[in-house]
Image 1 (spheres, rainbow, N blue to C red):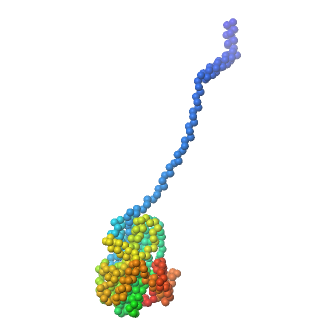
Image 2 (cartoon, rainbow, N blue to C red):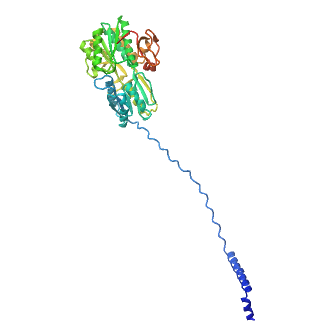
Image 3 (cartoon, rainbow, N blue to C red):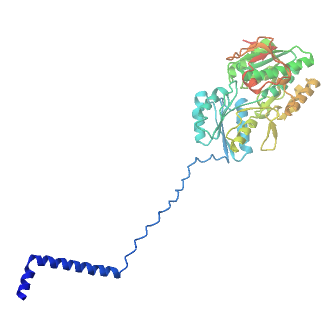
Length: 445
């Protein structure tokens, strides 16, 4: 029997059956094990991370210009020493540096149009915040730097062009107001009835100032019942000492002039007046009091220009951070500044040997001037200081038929009334279009 069983086990069928039974048994065991152990819970999915918004990086801004201090730079077209024009502007820069501990003044002399821009950039590199050209012909090139240096103020004196930019400022004082007062004195002093002007060249600036003087002479002539001739001869430029001397001598010797003034910048006309023993009427500065040129036996009166009033206006706007400053400054006797020593000075004023007002009239000249003229000088000066009277408003403008032809602005024919008495001319018209001499002047060739 056993042998039969062994035989059966050895048969292939039996082996296959046995393997199937073993497999079933194994599966049963595994199922039993699974029923006694808990299945692991599936892992919880992590919550989606909430992304924090990325902080924006601050946009880099250009640092604001430091406005706690300022450097004023003036480009002088001429030498400073021995001149009235550049001398007065140099004095203005020094006075402002004395007044304000946070203001410096730097300068260059004898600057021509080709040097305006490179000198300006050199001074800006050295800290200049305001750069001014003290004559139009060499100051105008600075307009090309305005966009390149937006935090710098640039400026130029006005001759007739009124071009501006946001930070390119044009300026001039109302010198004609003081010149009118000088004309009153000159008209009273002449005994020959002949007054001479040594002048630079025809320009709106020169013509306008001469016209202020002419109106003063003519008012004095009318008040005193005099016949007065006014002779003008041009030298061709601002600073030509030999030519200016020659013109002064010609006016005295050929035209019997006994009162001489100038619209040029050297001291030559004053020298000639002193040598020839005639009266001189000064320009731009109190040359007796400031330079010690001549004395009050020759200089009957002068006028003094305080450019510091205009530059002070620019400085205060720059220090205040003004991005859009006034671009045309035309200040007169009703504007002023208090200097470091406490002295208040107007933009322009009559001045001689350190004295102002009617005290500026030379003691030697004063005895020769009728009281009504002295009183009128005092009255008109007081009114102009208060902004209540102006010679260019009160008088009619009648053309002499001479002057300077401008593009689009011809010289009015002789006898033409261009502006009636009592009408206020605009600053723009006075600065850029007043291109004709007033009737009653002789322009010599």
